[in-house]
Image (tube, rainbow, N blue to C red):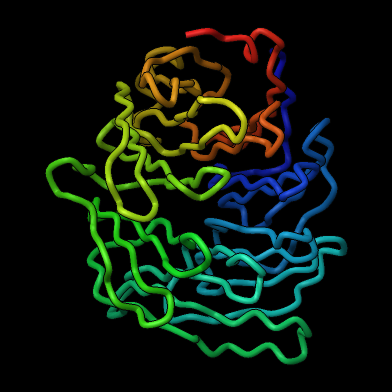
Amino acid sequence: MRPILMKGHERPLTFLRCNRDGDLLFSCAKDHTPTVWYADNGDRLGTYRGHNGAVWTCDVSRDSARLITGSADQTAKLWEVSTGKELFSFRFDAPARSVEFAIGDALAVVTTDNFMDHVPTVQVKHIAEDIDDQTEESALVITGIKGRINRAVWGPLNRTIITAGEDATIRIWDSETGQLLRESDKESGHQKTISSLSKSLDWSHFITGSLDKSAKLWDTRTLTLIKTYVTERPVNAVDISPTHDTVVLGGGQDAMNVTMTDRRAGKFEAKFYHKILQEEIGGVKGHFGPINALAFNPDGRSFSSGGEDGYVRLHHFDSDYFSIKM
């Protein structure tokens, strides 16, 4: 499995997202410039210039027409995917961390960090079809979470919003009233910061990765813990294969400790686990620093990883991956 090395960022990667058709890959990094690539050969298509802070996350609409990005410059921006034009900027009082479009692309959820005197919030924004009608008003603001919210995603049918972050608790909220519906069990849940969260293709379950060196699979509706994958490194990124019973975990020790160890000791490979049997089935080496972002292609035939080293690595699976028998 020869990786395609994609060099376009000057700073560590923070997030990767494929569009629904699987032909485009969007990458975010700490260098202010989200980038779009061809997902099959890794050619760079273009960049989205306008942020002046690290870009933490992004999401692309179902028709691949619009991109939304959340940045440390205290804005979330809407872009036209095909031209790179900035369509609208939502301003906040604190860095915008996590962004995601709802089904139908008429709503987006944005989280803001705890910053100075501001508490972390989860905000729902209306996304207008005609950009001239777009406003900055929030349809809903959820507060009351302690610590940074690293991820907020929509639940099935846009009825709920799922949040996870620094306080190691996963919470499910009603997306209309903002009422707290469920939260994860302290005993069986994560013990340290939840760094990442990724949903399955049908949204029936999702996986979380944590600095407590584990990833956990949860039921989306009931928040029941289904599986736990234990590794020997902090987990920064997770994803679920859309076609096979595999999950991928990426991480490594903190960036500040990287120089004291060689790359094998640093555990910078992407690890694959069997989703049901919870056993490790393989790993992909290559990054010279912790892996911060992972994304399967929607066709399940390739995956991309983004690292602290500023590279995106695109891997097309060999044929023997598809015939793994457990």
